[in-house]
Length: 167
Image (cartoon, rainbow, N blue to C red):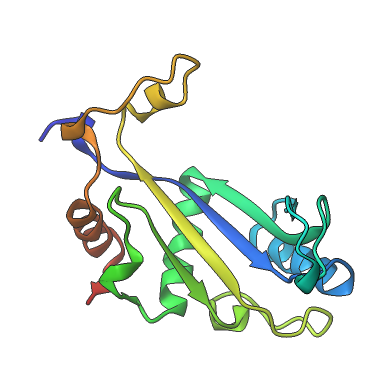
């Protein structure tokens, strides 16, 4: 098989949205730091929404991005937290997928932290093939239709690599 057709995990992004700055956000940052060993980034609101109490540049969530082997190792543990099952609707037409975990204590290898409490998180997984970096260059070339990852290819990759059941 052509090595340029191999699919790999480019990155996973873990996101915890709390909706307000303060103690909850600090707990979410601590959780992501303990889980990944990386420093999370706080994300801010861009719009003013009075009914939600949101204004521009107000920190409401935090996220951390992992790449390469560290991402692949953590992803296998995160998939075990959802029982190695995902519905087909969690995959988009470009082959990426995302899912949520209701409580972080469901993840194997993560201990309950009394200071953090119970928090859920979202996981977004981006898949790529060799040659996808052309879309990140300054000239921003496009990926050819035959080289893009389809929904079916990504489902097959996840089944084969992580032993997932997609229904």
